Image (cartoon, rainbow, N blue to C red):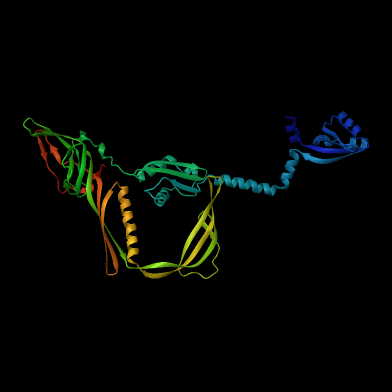
Amino acid sequence: MIQIIRYIKGYLAIRVFGFSPERFMNLCSHHNIFLWDVENHGDYYAMKISLKGFYRLRGITRKTGTRVVITRRYGLPFLSTRLWRRRIFLLGLLGSLVFWIWMSRFIWAVEIEGNYYVTTDVFEDFLSRSGIEVGMKKDDVQIEGLEKAIRTQFDIVTWTSAQIDGTRLLIRVKENDLIMAEDKETDGISGEGMDLVAGKEGEIVSIVTRSGVPKVTAGMTVARGDILVEGGVPIMNEDGTVKRYDFCVADADIMLRCLYNLKEEIGEKHEEKKYSGNEKKYPFLMLGTKKIKMPDFGKKYEMYDVVEEKTQLRLFENYYLPVYFGRDIVREYALEEKVYTRDEVKELFEVKIQNFIESLQEKGVQIIEKNVTISKASAVWKMNVDFLAVEKTGMSRRTTLSQTEDGFETGQDDGEELSDLQITD
């Protein structure tokens, strides 16, 4: 505690030498001037004295014939003096501190994790339309509302979490591979049932019924719109006639063997970029959306690609700043007309086939056979692919069964549009 008080008031390290240093110390004690850390070095004495006591030494040094030299200064009074001499530096430091605190109130980076089916570009467009963008205030981000809006906008997203970490908005999502309809909540209480009908033409491979009356068996061929499972269970009279129906929501696992077709065309001639090897690099600094780059004093290329490489400045791990630095790489090229060979066309078509297969597999479709035909006519390569596939089928539609108090009536509205069907699988 004494050391703290001494530091606040200030004290000095001094060196005393001359005719009678011992008498100097005795007179200081007599006048209540406190000395401490006294050390005898033969020709002189070293000690410490308070700042207030130092200003009272003039008469004592004159009486004792001694001299006092300050060797070091301690304490807040001397620190404030040194700081005042560097006031421009301190003002800059204070200004920087205020600037960083102010910048920390904004979002300077938005990151999305866990998305696969919904691309990052689509997410970013949605966030932009929702008012979520780089440079907005943290207080303007409604976390719960944002999470709900994402789940509402993207049906495939089953879980989402948003959090502000430093100056970064981190959004994590989880997607469902198969989107299941919610129409199974409909039951027979309303007096109407739901049938399962075929979504497309094909052959039934297998059927496992959980509710309803199956109308097809394995090996049967069905057309689009045919009833697979009826959403009404008949209650029979003693004479074998139907008394009434207990309506329900038809539910079954039905596998269908069906066909898919893919047609693609590629022109025999195409233009291809041939890079000359000439390139220019232009460093740039980007503040927010404003890009500051070096001017181009040389000859400009007629045709070129620009590749931007940039890095966002950040402090620590999650404190991002709206400052980017990087470079633009300009590469010159010329267009050459070339003709595809048969092998090149085959490779291009194989990529299209693979992409088509992957899109079907994402929907749960299993490809068991494919038949590819490639032909050329009028300088155009054409491909036709027939896929034999097995997929889960069954689309929900309001049943065509009806009944009265005295009996029942059945009927089917052949003009009902399948566009009103809802997937229940």
